Every structure is written in structure tokens, then in C-alpha cells.
Image 1 (tube, rainbow, N blue to C red):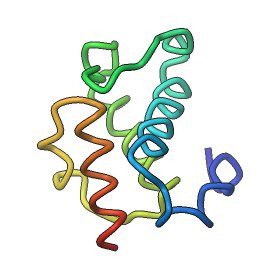
Image 2: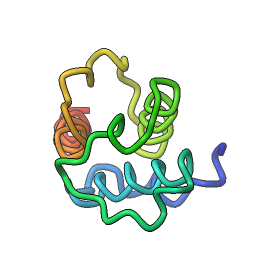
Image 3: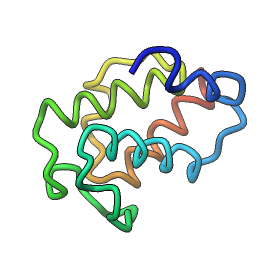
Image 4: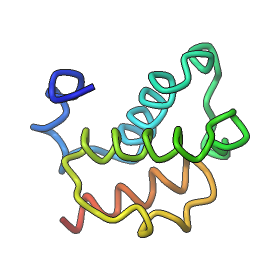
Amino acid sequence: MGAHSNKHYHHIEKSMNRADIFNIITHHSCEVIPELAAHPFQAGDQLAELGANSIDRADIIMMTLESLALRIPLVALAEAKNIGELADLLHAKLQSS
């Protein structure tokens, strides 16, 4: 997973919109849980309902934060109830960073 898998994201963080961030989250979700590759992701999807355990969810979020070059505590994202809300929160954090 290191810098090679997400190097192309680093130059466009600020210009990313919510859909871009949603796509990064779903990309990392499929990396962590390959069975989700054919899943038609929706904003209301919850990672836990898709089979992601707590470790998987932490991995997906950490990978997404790394892709976005964001450094924020995971607890700051705890209020997100689904992937769409997570994308919204990350988008807001990205705009204010």
C-alpha cells in the first residue's frame, strides 16, 4: 500500500469534490475487501454492513486519509454513519486544511 498506490492523488487534493473522495473510499474498500469489487456502491452504504470489520474500516479510512494527504484523528470521523457522510466529512476537512 505505500506511496506508490496513491501518489497520483497528492497533487489534486484541494480540487477534489465529494464524488472524487467517495470514489477513493470505495477504491480502498475494494482493496481491503476484494469481494466488494462488483458492488455498486451507494452513498448510504455502511462499511460494516458490507462486511468490513473494525480493523478493515480503520484500514480503509487510514488509506483514504493517506491518499488525501490529510492528518486528522479517526475519532473526528466517528460521526459518519455511511460512506456518503464520510465523503462529506473528508471533503469538508480537505477544504479547511
